[in-house]
Length: 336
Ligand SMILES: [Zn+2]
Image (tube, helix red, strand yellow):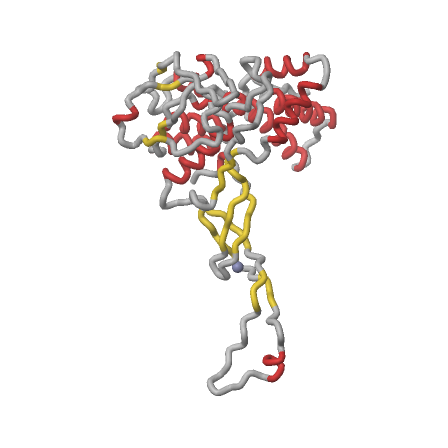
């Protein structure tokens, strides 16, 4: 029976470096981290009208280094959550530089998201682990747009707009045939043009968090910290499925067991209580009935559209017709 590592930080790929949190990476002297020092434990609490999301100081950190003297840093223009879950009210950010480019290269080579998260950490002045996943994704988009201005992320799509059949070209002095004149409405055909549209600030939609939405007191939105841990088990499941496709003999029970663990892990990361995914899973499994699970599923459904929209608006370069296309962005292939 395969051992399943939930929350132990062991990546499925034995040859890869052990998963570590960004905090550990920083402690070990990650790139650009030497000058980042922890500070500001007591930060003023942001609360919206009627909503009190009081994070404990340990949940939110702001790195008090001299980023304002570093001309590369700018104030992040917006954040899908409007800072509702944090003790800080602004994020300073700079584009990626070579050390982070190296980390992204390492992330892609090792298929280990921890390096990507470390790269993001190096470019912002708050603890990336505290960010909710939707805000993290927005920051990924910001970094992608602002770090590679000459190499934008491109979306390939075929235009299926109906366009009029082009009129036959007439020789000089030639008259259109009676049939062509009689034709009342021009026939149409699918444009079929193969487009390559660059992702830009104008075609990506950000769905902000509805300020009216109530977050049940026992829940929070999954953070990067939890996402890292669930990503490990989700990846294990994906690998097992790939092995299955490639003809490996895997017992049904083994697959079902992992499916079940991923299901619970994905739910548990919404719990406010518990410091690790393991603890959250225990809390969820110890709940005496299904009510907590139902509350999580309900909130998750309501927040389905929140964050960077997976659908972008595109315009055909040939016929000018507009369309919408679903993006399927994988964190590890999003960067060049
Ligand atoms: Zn077209």
